[in-house]
Image 1 (cartoon, rainbow, N blue to C red):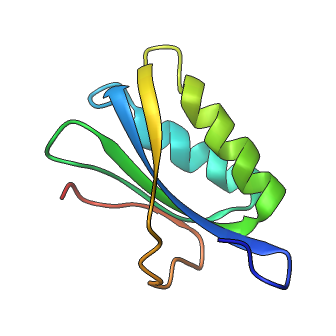
Image 2: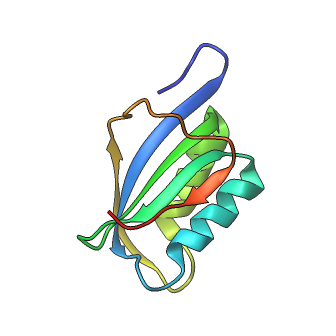
Length: 98
């Protein structure tokens, strides 16, 4: 979701071999490098979910990087999810599994 101030929010679900390989830590490091706020967490169904807030172009680039992931990942796909409107920042967190 793009906002009038150039900032955007996006929530995604990443499927494939993305758990047990450091994917969440990799996403957190890439988000911090880009200056994007939000969180990432594992889901019990084997997927990873992430929410990002920041400049739209930075978020788009981060999502594209998530399509590759770390070299140990095998990303099968990324699905855009509805934004729940919850506050994301400040910073970027690795959250517990849901």
